[in-house]
Image (spheres, rainbow, N blue to C red):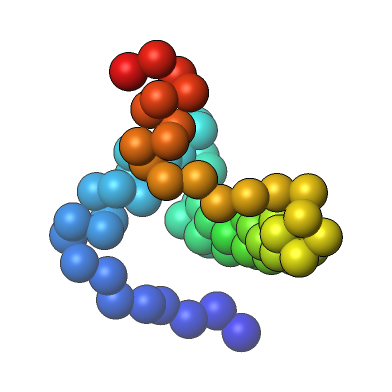
Length: 74
């Protein structure tokens, strides 16, 4: 069943700018955004888990901003 949704003019303008071609539907754009967010979320979750394991295992250490600047020569 098809339905309509209400969006602001600002959002409509952004969706229009995201179109890859004039015949691309807003549904296609929204699905692409959802898929991108799901992939990013999964990637981010895995990265955080890996980072936490590295901290626990002593393979990674937290650095202060000043320490990073010092290492980079600033």
